Length: 130
Image 1: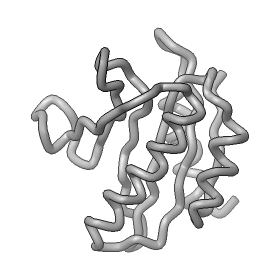
Image 2: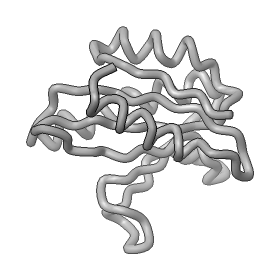
Image 3: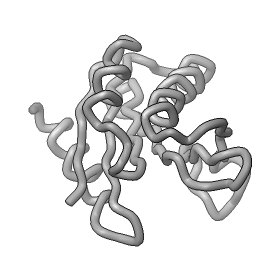
Image 4: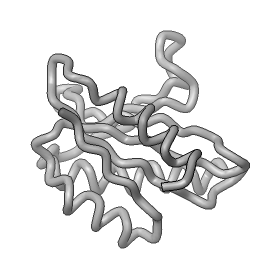
């Protein structure tokens, strides 16, 4: 793993530290630069994969742009019926392209998520919590 990826992996791993729920995650390495529409679509596509493997049902995106207590370029996938947590992500600009770190409950099928996100055309690093 290259140095930037190692640092990003370690930071993503720290986000999964034990809390109220056990989490896993993925780092989605994109070649998306300043194309906001492409970044938004990639976030939705990966969110769909996670929601499918978490059996979440219908969901929507709650964005940091909508709430001053939530970070810019930080988004959550929440269920429509109960506003329950499905996933959260941070879109991080690194060397001109975005790395998007997603995390979600550990009972979602990690290997299927990694495989399906790769099928979307992205390079993916899986990150498992404790």
